Length: 206
Image (cartoon, rainbow, N blue to C red; front, side, top):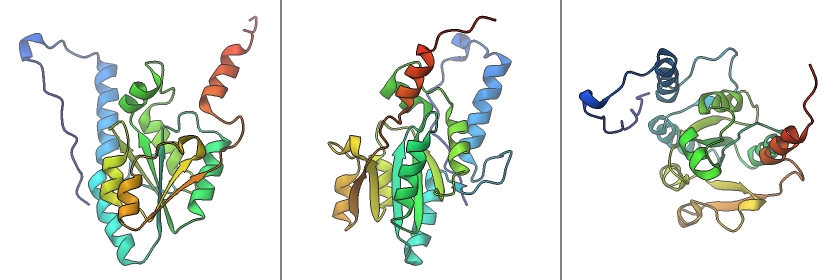
């Protein structure tokens, strides 16, 4: 499958650029390689498949020809917890294929502040690829996945009940004859709650 190359930022003039530290260069290369290949290098055999945008759109067309019901959901999925897993299992039970679109690191920072994400995008995607309920994983940089949803046009768009007031892509999916649904959340299961509990623990004396 052809890879969709990310649009590079406008470079600074060479005279104004400072050389990046070696570790920063390696980290940037790792993220670029992860996001532009169809199957990233993992330490285990993934259950799901990672797709760049072009690859996902092409595969969506195949699923449509095969008559498969495609379900789509999205989120940050920072610090994966049982609430995430149970929502994904419910979503997967509604169709034949479940696409999970993850906010990029830049998107998470814009949404939740400079201290997030706790887990970088390539590692969040690796975790998602290991979930049996998930069939396809992709990343998006925009503030919402509306543009991506407009390309994919899933048969069913899923969000947690906490987003019932605004579901990006609703208009596009419903105009194409698809369904938009919200699923209940697990009480007390959220990354924010987990982080607050950890920070609230007294430090142990060494």
